[in-house]
Amino acid sequence: MSLDTAVKTPHDQLAEMLAADMAAVNALIRDRMASEHAPRIPEVTAHLIEAGGKRLRPMLTLAAARLCGYAGPYHVHLAATVEFIHTATLLHDDVVDESTQRRGRPTANLLWDNKSSVLVGDYLFARSFQLMTESGNMRVLGILANASATIAEGEVLQLTAAQDLATDEAIYLKVVRGKTAALFSAATEVGGVISGADEAQVRALFDYGDALGIAFQIADDLLDYGGTSAVIGKNTGDDFRERKLTLPVIKAVARAGAEERAFWIRVIEKGRQGDGDLERAIALMQRHGAMEAARNDALMWSAKARDALQGLPDHPLRDVLGELADFVVSRIR
Image (tube, rainbow, N blue to C red; front, side):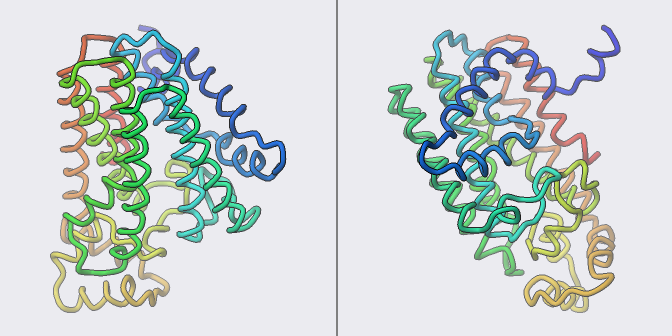
């Protein structure tokens, strides 16, 4: 094995193995994000889609379809659909979160305005539904439509639960399954469905995507308290400043004494944050082992994702998907 091969990430390997399919996906995305009458739509969309995103979700659809032996054209349409749904949610999320940075660049709502971000996000959702119908597969349409509704539901649940210290790990998991894992699992599941895979394999693909998405989100939550801006694509501590009850915070709150709980009420529920509060929050999470416990949860979900692959055909793509499950949590070890 050459040195070049040895240092490639699972994501890089997927990109190489699916290069021709991804080229077709990217061409379709560029074609469908065009607008004859509203030039701001491709401007805003291109800013986000061409900002160096990893295209992980559409690659999951392509990989699942190829793994199950699909030889038709519609995996490309479904992969583009998944990317449009993802991009639409990012545009909306940045408005809701009042974010200023995404993938290391200014957000669309900062460069243009909130109205443009919301309306272009709506346009991309509409485009995604146009794309998904072109496969002519009603089951695929149902999966992606349900995922879109679940994502919106998860975002609303997070809005109501994010600053409530009564939010526990069960509610957190519902939020994560909604806002993150739903699109991962839909992306993998539709790849199997469009291929005509048997029900056991379709279920295995769903389980893989679900567990991978949960592991991915927990890792992302942990990185907010210990990663670098270059790695996470946003500013370290953004979740704390936005008063989000992510898993490490939930675990620390559950183990807090009266004085510590008063601190969490002040900074999360009441939003009165000052100098040194982020550092104290991190120290409390470390004192109670909350960071380590959340890390162990991420590793558990990563292992579940890898285990789900055992029900799928023996294929080089299956091996890389297994490595991907390990890779999404490798940043937090």
